[in-house]
Amino acid sequence: MCTICHLYPIPLAIASSRQCAAVTGVAVNDSCLEAFTDLKLKHTSKYVVYKLNDQNTEIIVDKTSNEKEYDSFIADLPETECRWAVYDLEYDQGEGKRNKILFVAWSPDQAKIKNKMLYASSKDALRKKLVGVATDVQATDYDEVSYESVLDKASRGAR
Image 1 (cartoon, rainbow, N blue to C red):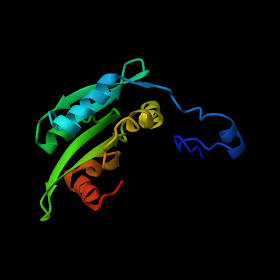
Image 2: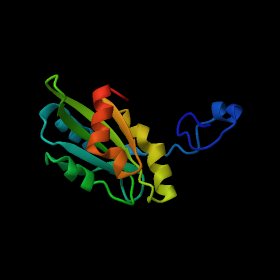
Image 3: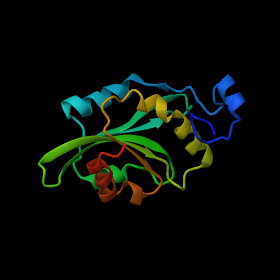
Image 4: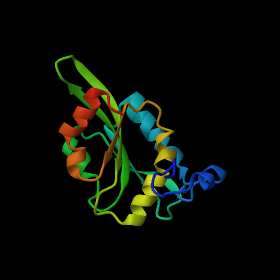
């Protein structure tokens, strides 16, 4: 199994002698980090949605929003296309108000296989730049990214 993308079975001798064929080498646009920094430090947005550009060569910001309703965030995740997102989750479970930044890898079941593979193999390029994320969420349907599911992961400190 490939240690980078976990998609392709690769014999150990081959995997150790060359990079995984699924690594896309996409760049992360500077605006991605700027939008994340604004969310994390300035709290000027509640969430940021990222996507690959039309040429699949660069990760770009798809949308930023300061909409407080979690349902608005869910509505910005397309039913048939993959995305990545960061969400500033604020919650109170009797221990006082807390904030955790979530990284969401959205790969819906209805997305095309090629799209899923591109996003899976490019995720680390973006994720490694986003220092300060508390919880990672992998979601393939809306139930896995529901407020209750995400709150459960965040409050347990799951990564």
